[in-house]
Image 1 (tube, one colour):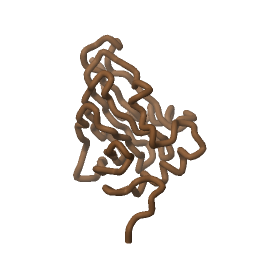
Image 2: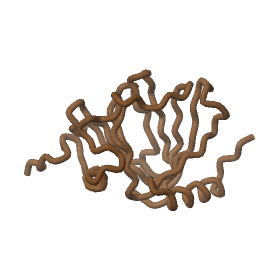
Image 3: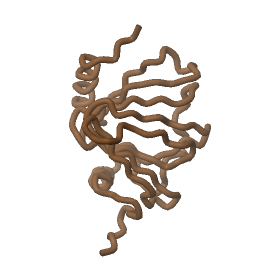
Image 4: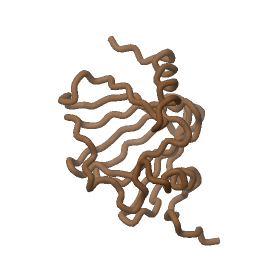
Length: 165
């Protein structure tokens, strides 16, 4: 048995708090070859997950919010927000399933946020062509501005384009 409890969350959140990327992963599955990949992901405010999709190979992705709060953003091919879903321990929404090939990202809304992610295996790193060309790369100077934009982005918004009044 593999307990998933507050002690595990606390340790993972502490690791994420110390990590330069402001996030940490805890694999639940035993092998990258397993047909179902399962993990806990702790994120701290300011972490940047470059918008991406899972097209090569095509995979869906299930995200459940276990602690804290986060917003999931869906995008079209030009980087315009098509959907925003805020999930949290004290919010109505607790997660979502993202269809294969959908551009998406997650932005952290509260310290010590923990997500459960499940997707088909075997593990395959995100292909270079599946990272959004219209968003900053991880580590780029503009990434912090992009995170601040994602915190308030709504459907119809596109980074760098003023919102209509």
